[in-house]
Amino acid sequence: MSHIQEDLRPHGRIALDTNVCIYFLQPPSRWSPLAADVMSLPMSSELYIPDIVRLELLAGAYRNGDASETGRLRRFIEEGVRIGMDDDVVDAAAQLRAATRMKTPDALVAACAAVAGCTAIVGNDARFRDLDALTGLTLFAGRQFAPMPQYVHLGDYLPYA
Image 1 (cartoon, helix red, strand yellow):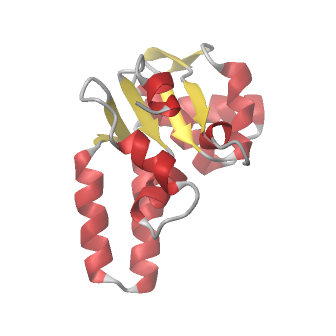
Image 2: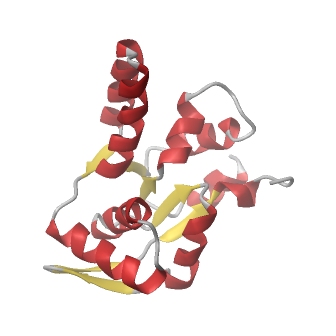
Image 3: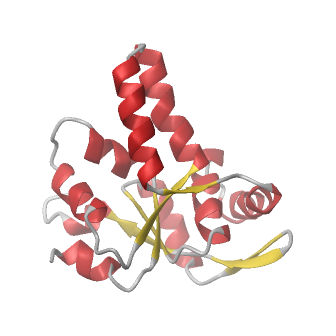
């Protein structure tokens, strides 16, 4: 078991940011092995894919006009648990933007994860470092309270990142 898998093992619900999915699906890069480790977590962990991540993944395939890539992405997305964007997510994302000045897509990823009850978000975006200070903070998301998940940054697992 890799170091990132050990760190993610206690998390039952894990949200994926777009970059982790891209690293897993695209040609090999220095990030690909870490993304593969995340995607091959034990069955006790569920991988969640926010709708905003789904949108970002599919937009690239549509932009390239690649029907086979679009199909491959749809199959990949179906393997994860989908997190839709409802009023609770929008409310939580607005609170995150107000507290951190995160960009809207990033705030939506984090809000989707919080509202879905994920305890971790895996990504590789330095802008998400703002979330480190908010781990455990409880957002009021419309009809429910949503604790902020921990952000697991892939860069922390590369010695030369």
